[in-house]
Length: 344
Image 1: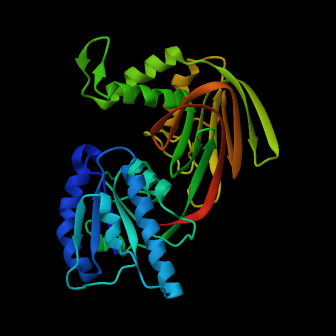
Image 2 (image 1 turned 45 degrees about the vertical axis):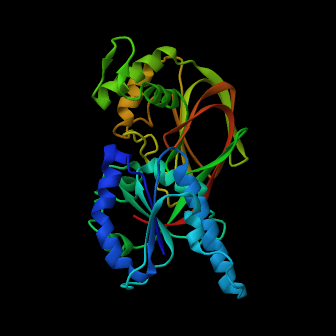
Image 3 (image 1 turned 90 degrees about the vertical axis):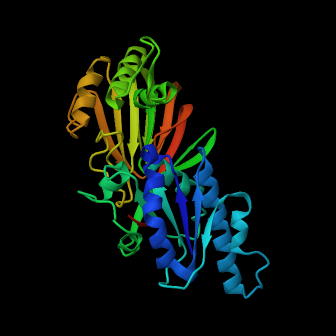
């Protein structure tokens, strides 16, 4: 059984168009083996779907091992969700899996919600754009597969993911976590809807212009704070003028290569910490980060770790894989090496 989780709004409707393109092939390819499709409507849906799907699959696997008679069926997964289900003449045999059609945010929710304890449930990912941060980190010159058969024929990779823990619980992440200035820019973009500039009262149609507006606004408001980090329980460092921290499992985030050198398959995470008295230096640092040339600049500190603790004097803006999660000041972040079975 293949469980498709589709974000129809991803990429300005590309998620739905991509599913419509793949749907007929799915019917003929999967046949009697069957498939189910779940469409997300709001933030958090993909997380909920993934949790229910993997819970039911784990139940089925347990019944097969113990020989128990199934009292529930996988149809129960559909109890609360609208979707499509198809069982026709079997064409191929494909291992139970989730196939995600959407962006990095949708993939993050699926991985965060899935029950991965037994480390045996594969995930296929069909990004809506070829320049997706996660996809291009794993494969240079990435091209979106033209068909489901091409996707399912790809080699499975064992990929790392990260866990971030704080006062409000824990989350998994696949690309990056940010605190401070860069997370504040993201929050501002989300509050604007990437479309409205309140001062001029006009619609900003260009994403680049929206980002520039948010960048300048947050640069004016940015505050330097004191804080410390503890790497792998051994090396503690203190900083007096922290502007932001960016933690990476993969190199890219919103076009910036702040985590250049991160691979997602090496069992470690990469940290880029900017601490400088001069806020305007951020302009140069962020421009250089577009090309991954920022590491040697004054105020930039880069480290690699398996586990890190962050302690800041005050709360700052916080995001996980591009999802704004309010503010935090104390976090623990760790790498889970090779725990994802992934096709992309």
